[in-house]
Image 1 (tube, rainbow, N blue to C red):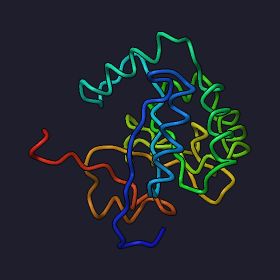
Image 2 (spheres, rainbow, N blue to C red):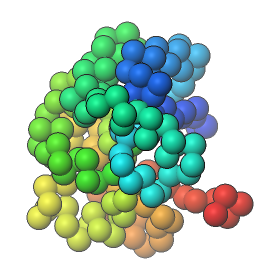
Image 3 (cartoon, helix red, strand yellow):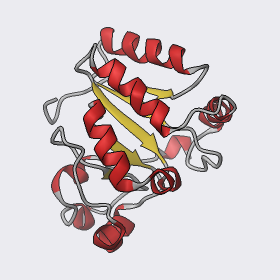
Length: 174
């Protein structure tokens, strides 16, 4: 994907309405031109999400799927498309699953990145070495901290591609 070019980046909650349907939805989005597809890992306390994603997360959680199931889904999808595939999640599920385990398995499955919505760039910079949050997913992409608006001075301190992965809450949606 070229910088400065607009992209279609839809979001899908993994496991909603079920895992098989999620896989079909992701493939359909890829076939209709999605450049990157955000696959949301459901979490019991999705405070950064609005009511629609909160509801789909709660419904997905009721199925009992876990990160390992979502990684296997990514592996199946990756064998059928080259569209960018990223997980959108919170830090707690990542830490619970294990950082190194997630990186290793996600890279092997073909995941392109992980956006962690409650890990601000500031916190990433403070604790990346101590927490093990450094590293790459093996396809040349890395975990990206996502948080509220980031100042230009902080953006210049972020390593690698992170300055281009800043989530901005638009005023009209606040």
